[in-house]
Amino acid sequence: MAKVLIDRDQVKSNYQDFLKYFPDFKTAYAIKSNPHQEIISIIDQSAGYYETASYSEIQYLLDLDIPAERIIFSNPVKARECIENALVAGVNKISFDSLDELKKFAIAQKNTGKKVHAIFRIEVSNEGSIWPLRQKFGAHEKFWDGIYDYIRTENLYLEGITFHVGSQAESLNVWELAMPKARRAFEKAFSYGLKPDLLNIGGGFPIFLGREIPSLREISEVIHRHLEDWKRDGIIIRNLYAEPGRYVSGSAGTLIANVIGVAERENQRWVFLDAGVFNGMMETIDGITYPTLSTGQGTPETVMLCGPTCDSVDRMFEVTIPSPKVDDRLYFSGAGAYTHVYSSNFNGFKQPDVQFMDDYDAIRESEGLLVPGNE
Ligand SMILES: Cc1ncc(COP(=O)(O)O)c(C=O)c1O
Image 1 (cartoon, rainbow, N blue to C red):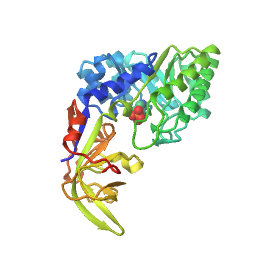
Image 2: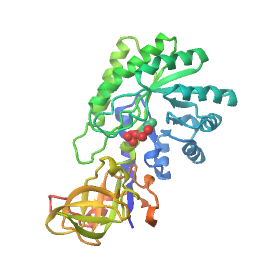
Image 3: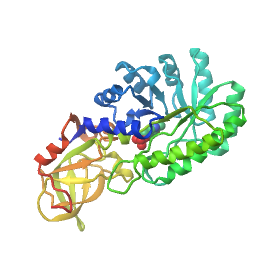
Image 4: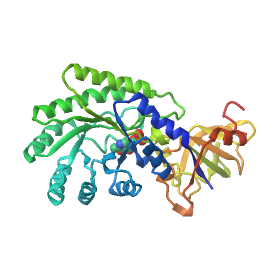
């Protein structure tokens, strides 16, 4: 059966990277990427913060004794009872990106007697991100006036501005574009007499998935250069947040799948695995690929990988590996995020197991893994 191995030390050091390169930020781990209790507890050891998308995620964290003050609720559109439950639980930093969501905030405040600290998600470019979010979330600039006018009229509390450059953002330029836009959002808010004092730069920080990516240090330099410019012009934002998901959990995980069949399809061999789009590798449908190692021997060959289900969507990506055969194992690195958490039991194929370990390199060596092109 397929499984996901997570290297605890790697999770720790990924989170520590944020403390190093974004020391002036609160780093809220996006638990959607991998909500495993062990990761929650690693973040808790640094008294870290958490980003959530639903009330169930909030409840899950509260049940693990994470204080409400260290939880933010960044899904811009949610059912009213989720907003009310969050407020009652003490989670008050809540995102929105539309007038309708603000109307829910106003009602939720009346019903609970608690104040929403509203965080405004603006639309920014997602160009170059492999898993974009822009079309679904973020208010276009043409709506900002209406939104600020409503906040002022209803006397709501706008605590901050947020954006998300899209997941696995592989171009530094998206942060270069997002920061001036966020600045405009602050300036417009000030012109309405509002006093937002929090910037949340969201997630999107990329991990190595086989292509060149900007480093966390480079992204930090871009963000801090813009913040310095803002400061020089009198725009001082006191509360800074980032919400990495993939960066913290992704590179710490390796998905191990077994070859269950090999078949000839037109001019190519297809390799059927016990993990696929429906059970662990869902992100491959939109262009995510994972660096792949194989325990197989023989001449390298470019094959198409697919999952075990009877659905034709369950086809993943091409990879060059030693000539595959049944019972070979494939190792996909960078697969700690958005893998088992996305999986279903479609066709009766089980979700991959998740195992935590301390020495992944030793396991790899003991398997005698062959690096493609290096055999
Ligand atoms: C609001 C929000 N914050 C943070 C994240 C985490 O993004 P990533 O895993 O790309 O860092 C997401 C992902 O969808 C998100 O929707």
